[in-house]
Length: 214
Ligand SMILES: O=C(O)c1ccccc1NCC(=O)[C@H](O)[C@H](O)COP(=O)(O)O
Image 1 (cartoon, rainbow, N blue to C red):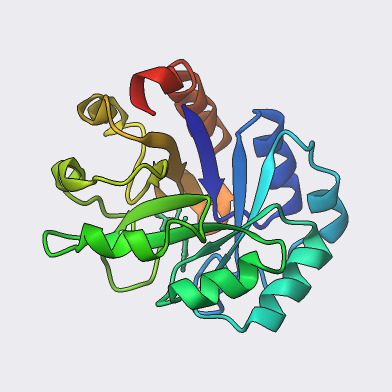
Image 2: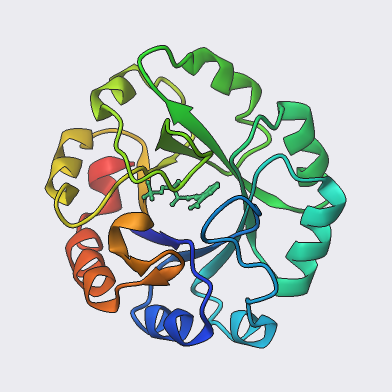
């Protein structure tokens, strides 16, 4: 199974995490987040990451121009959208060559059928928990809700995932689960990841074969 480590910012920490070989790394471009990269993100370090590590810019209802400029600046392969972006908005970015991970915050009332309007515009869905912030809340949602998922699009699961609840991924066997997204539960401070925790997480998640899930 794939691993995405989200909310990186510090250059040295990014290099240490990259050395562990995650599949995706994410950078937050939402100025209300404690992980907002601001001017701190070292462009050269990001660009020097191996191509095998996919770089993701995370945005919340940002202007397409800002997204395009940022993608170009850091050479991102994906953008992850955490706001109320519409299918039309996603399509306009996709038409400009951007690969999209669309995030949705899931609870009991989540309407899975509306994903049909997004599936042609997105590469992956990401299911996150609801909280005060658009992401990075550190809380889980009831993964049983995903039994109602009836789309063919592979998805990431996220929201409060850490070493303590990883074993529960077993309950998602047979689903279109593509990867796990981790963030606040593997941090020493906002935007700084705990290298030992990420290492253990990768060692535990990676052996879960994709065929078992997707
Ligand atoms: O991490 C943030 O601060 C954040 C803020 C605004 C939008 C998205 C954000 N994070 C995106 C992610 O992909 C997180 O990994 C995801 O929300 C799960 O975070 P956590 O619950 O802390 O594991």
